[in-house]
Length: 266
Image (tube, rainbow, N blue to C red; front, side, top):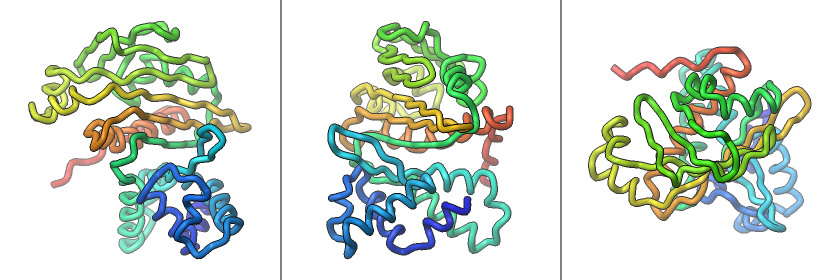
């Protein structure tokens, strides 16, 4: 965590994070606009933020897009936050909230985490029901071949919509599939109002992609969830859901256990 605190100590780097919090997925040129810094200085600050995993990048054609990443702050909050005094706890909690609340006008969610595991074990954790049920509560009925349908079961809710399909499956490197259907049974199982269920059901079907990159003794996992419409309720939901799922995945692979459920507020 030393890299995270070092990265956050500089006000210029915090301004870059603020800029990405306002509008995620910016190019270097866009980040330089409105900031009293040279292109070279911005590049150096971004390199520090990337090294701390507070910023992650993806290529889109010839452009390199930068995304704010909440994973390091989630790790602090989930595993070490109890070691700090009350003032620091509040500061970290505020930062965690800011990093997870990127502008809802964006049409995708991008999240990067580093896991001490192997590509083979991570692939199994993403595809084997024995694993997915432990950290996610969901299981998938599919042969994981491109074009194959996916049955989806989660806490007793089952969906076998033929539009739930595997899009890409390159073992140990890349996995992509369409997101699940929202129906009345889904709304009832997860206690959505009829209005929210109808709004979610009317949205376009999104897709999620897992990019796996081995880096020595660890694996870099990038999750890209995209294809949402304007003011998407589903996007708001996955922004809240994915960090917890991925934190539990990381904990399961590194320790053999999953994160405990958060205590209910009194």
